[in-house]
Image (cartoon, rainbow, N blue to C red):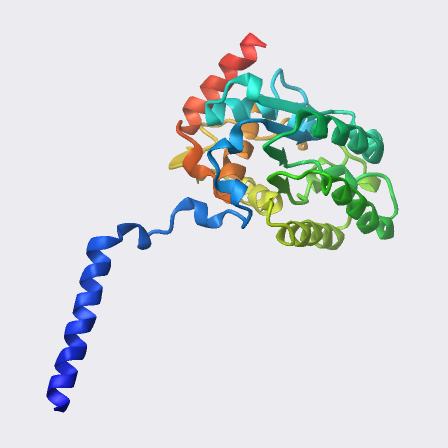
Length: 274
C-alpha cells in the first residue's frame, strides 16, 4: 500500500511539472508589468494618451534645445501633441509658488500619466536651514496629491559635485539629510498605488561609476558625457538615459520599441525641428 501511494505521489508531481512546462512559459520570467504599482490605470492602453512632464531645469532641458517631454515622445514613439512639458529652469527661485502654478496647468491638461522626475528636487535642495528641509519637501509632495493619475516621481539625488559650479554649499543638504529626504519620497510613493518611485539617487550613482547597460546597449555611447560641465544638468545623452532608465525601472520598459541609439537620433531630429 505504501508503494502505491508513493507511486501515485510521484506521478502527480511529474504531471504537475509537465503541465507547468507546457502551459506557462511566461511564469518562468515575470513580465515587466509586475513591477508596476497596484493602480489598474498603469496597465491600460491609454496610459500614454496625454503625458505631462512636470519638474525643474533638468526636465526643462537646461542648456539644451530639448526637454524631457520631447525625449519621452521619441522614446515611446508618441505624437508630440500627446506630450506636454511643464518645467522651468527658474523653478528653484520659488518652488512652492511655481509648484502651485504648475498644478493648475496639470489639472487643466488632465493627463493620463505625469512624469515628475525632478519635481521634488528644489523642495529638498535650496537655501534653507537643514531642519526646515523635511517640512518643505512634504509641502512639495502634498502638491502632487492633487494629481489623480499615474505618476512617476524621482527621488533625491546627490548633486554635491555641483558645489562651486552651479550650486552653493548652502543650497545642498548634508548627505544624511539627502538620504532621509530620499526615503520620504519613497515612502510617499509607496503609500499611493498610482505613484511609481524612480530611484534617481541610485541610478545616478551607477552612472557615475561608468558605462552601464541600458535596454541591452552600453550607455552612454562612446565617450559621451551624461552631465554638462556644471555637473548638475544632463546632456542630451544624459536626458535620453534618464528617460529610458526611469521607464525601465518603474516597469514600463516593454513599451519602448526603439533602441537607445535610435531614440537619441530621433531626439536630435526633433530638436532640430523645434
